[in-house]
Amino acid sequence: MELIAQNESDPASWPAKPADLPAAADAWPAAFIWKQLETRIAWRWNARDVEWIVEGPGAFDLPLRPATISTVEVFDDATGWETVTLAATPRGGLYLPTRDAFRVTASAGDSEAPPDILLEAYRRLAVYLAELEGEPAPAGASSHMIELGGVRESTRYDPWRRARAIDMSGAGDLLRIYRRA
Image (tube, rainbow, N blue to C red; front, side, top):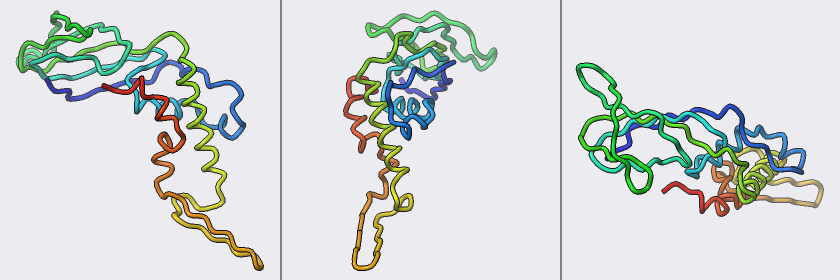
């Protein structure tokens, strides 16, 4: 089995931000922070449409959770996509019996509020990014020096600190139980 494509829409609305964020952290758009967190996890909150194109044969376990399958189609060269019914796998996925391309359409996302641990990951990432924006050094600088009179200040930054924000903020550690399989 090979996953060829995953097309995931944004939810109608993103989950609420954690309460009492510092002003600079609260200024980050919720969609931006949630999308950053979702790149690391299989779980979704607030329903959204998802479409997977998968080639069989084999077991296809849904890569996003929770998910409810609405349609399954197989591609026929002569007629295009045709609806099919496939056997389920023990983990709630589908068994793809042939080498054909299958299109699985589903809704993914939990209607409950995200758990506290995920809100803490949101908080850590937003606060970290806000602190980066407040740094006096130019973005991406690996070193920075200021000399005023006899006082010298020197700072060295990881040039990849923005790209590694989830890890550097500690948010990534909190996401472990929701990671992709």
